[in-house]
Image (tube, rainbow, N blue to C red; front, side, top):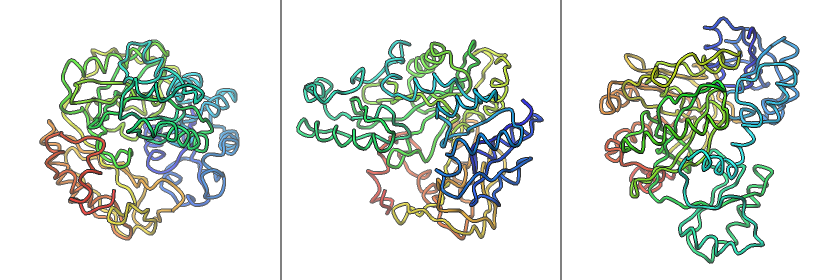
Length: 451
């Protein structure tokens, strides 16, 4: 691998460019018209403008990205997360052009991208799953009877969904058919597939995931993460390791995640996501993400393993070079997603000029940001500015350090989620690890926010 094209923008593009530079790999940034003066475009060795501001005409334009790779002589493509990262068609185009695709094989992306098929693959790998349908729903069948057998509440999920999208809850039998029909229409519009399936709903669920890494022959896990602090099924705070999971369940979750990666001959970095039901003390498979996760830094800081470097090594044909017993865990880490949004106004996006951007530092504090002071946050893309990552020797100390670090962050000119983060780290439920995926909705009045 000599020259890497980064098919993404913002924070993750900066992250990949930095890792490549440390490895002596030249980099190419693709930028939209709106991102001409971006940090990632400036940091890369070369920058190619690929289209207008709209993502559909630039970052999602496969032909434009491939043309940029040909124009610059890039021999590899890293998709980051979002955009084209889990697009099997794009991965195949990269491979067909004799370029290195930094990710799993297209057939693996297809398998895990279909949540119903992924669920079946998990069952075959011995991964525990929630009660639900082992296949797509056919509305010609008695779907009410199927729902009755699973029990209420339950959720109908888009088979091609992901990222918390394409999910609707059903509380009563009389709502089943109408909710399924609505979910099918939404799934078709969002994912170009109307396939849906049922799954038992966990009322006070914890969202826990396992980071896996493999080269197609050897597989390891880099521990687990908790992503339960969410707003409307979108993660906002993550931590590693997940607190309060019984040791036996934690070990089973990690081992079965590796087994799923092994059975799918997974290559690269991937994440197996689970729900933990603290009332029943059960874990269950949700999905597998065939890409780098936003929250990958917290796994890096507790293991000392650079996940992007590992992605690039594996994609270039190198072997993993270590086994599970060589992976060691130390301390506890939190990641705070800092978005250009106004929490006091229903989280409305807050584009505009960044007048002040003072980020925290000191021991155990890392800032992964895609913006600098004096730059403008555009309204065309995801609102995430960057991530604050905090580590210390245990959870209590890491939480204290997080409070200090968040208090030091000063961003003016735009509204951000920093004030909300300061409130969340002070919550009793969070300090005692009693939070769950719907906690924020249940205490929104207490926080004085519309969540």
